[in-house]
Length: 256
Image (tube, rainbow, N blue to C red; front, side, top):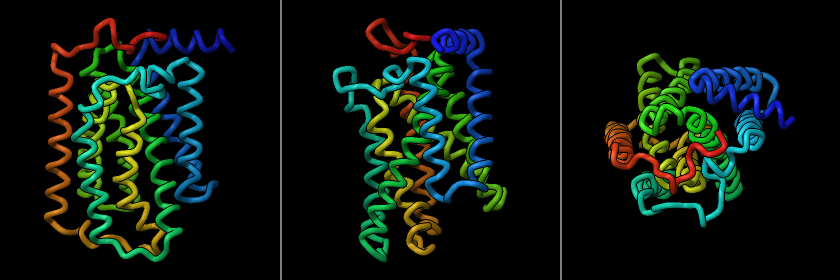
């Protein structure tokens, strides 16, 4: 097993993009299979979480991608913008949603956390870490590109133009989150912030009998969301400006 792990590490070091692409394709294929054989809402998220954390543990990357303790975290104040975006979603939920029952809220929160864990472990975990040999900026951009492409699946339920919006929005979101993960050396807060957005929509909507927040279709909400995504991506560029490239005190490429 150790030899196999070393071989995969060597492959990831030789061909970072190919490794990330293979992982992405495997994850995508699993999602397609899970959609037919596992319970909706949570079945695929469990499989994806196990896959991602399993790969990270096998390669010795868990601590490197931010599944670590507070002693290894850096500059948590830099998370103010993702935190503000999460607060924006939670505020909208409290102000606009009609709750059918307390258990719906609890279950939605758990599913949102599971989804946050699944997507962060995959894209700000395995994919981002694999791409780090290209440098922080390129790694963040490429990992965000993979995250955006994941949302092409919305073509199954949404018109092409709406799907394109999802893809672009996911790219901007993923780039900002990748920058925050690299600068803070932790993934835990990002999982929680990510869950806040998924909790608001669509997870709670699916559990609440399909009754979703009317504000989602409001043009002001759409504009506000686009502005937040653009700000997040711009903030990511600011965090990854050249003079902030990793130094010897940050754990980024160890264990590659």
